[in-house]
Length: 246
Image (cartoon, rainbow, N blue to C red; front, side, top):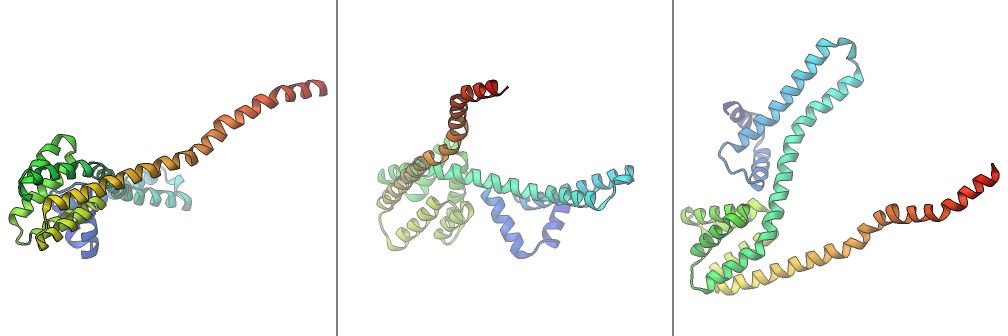
């Protein structure tokens, strides 16, 4: 872990440090040494690739050529890229899961707020309910509850939520809640509006996906239905023609 900390402090710039930290947070890696472990894994795989390539060339010097060197370099750098791409994929999957659960979360927030619970209590209760339904979103809400207890600026907790997840629904909720707290608006009414907008967005997204289905089905239908049908129609005549010519 100390080696990863050295990589973190010596080998990457402040800008890259922030980008990688955001990438890991988006993927759900909140541990203190997550960035150090990520860099250790990435550079470790590169060093393993260099060692394996060097061993192959030492044992089989006749395979050493410009082409094999280029392939070896591509494999070595590819090992480092694979780690980052896997983390990006994890972040995208987590983001999609959170986005799907947002309308239900906001509906539960509305119920809690209309029952008279405060914002902190509502977030805590909803987070506990989501622990088994959507652990990813529950984890984010638990973190927001903890930040609300310690941060001097409560609005910063919701901004952090939006920046960590990069989920559009949570960005809208964070902005709306901050405005409601600043201007003294009703939290329940604000959450109901956001929940309705989120439901409408989900409906539009599903309609858009349904509208794309016929276009996506075009190529499989042509390849799997039209071509075999033409072959069945043309095959008897083609066989007869071949028989008559022979």
